[in-house]
View 1 (spheres, rainbow, N blue to C red):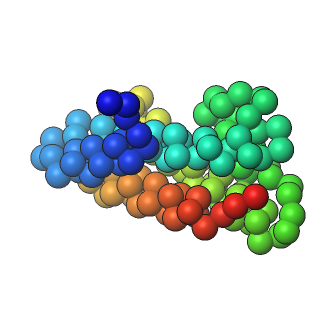
View 2 (spheres, rainbow, N blue to C red):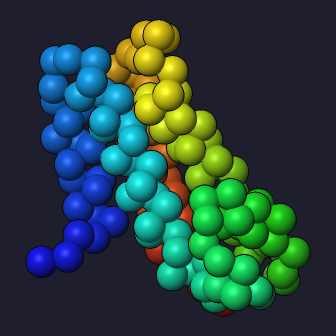
Length: 126
């Protein structure tokens, strides 16, 4: 059975119930990957999105710099890019800043960002 973006979010929510900081760090990390993988299908629909690859930075950049019309679409797509970038920043702290405390609030914030990204992706179409 293959994993889905929803599986990443589900495990993030389970990890959030943990009592150790490592659970919270892993929750934030898995949440980001839920958002990243969820964003890929729509990313491929963006002009030149799929042809330029799907590295994390490129995906975020393509969303954040989207110039398409109508203006409402442009704002929504760019918002997804901003949210993805925020989730990535939290994931990087969780994964790399081991000397820094990682409170439950940060993991909750990451999961909240992902849920907002999922909602935006449900509401947008090209």
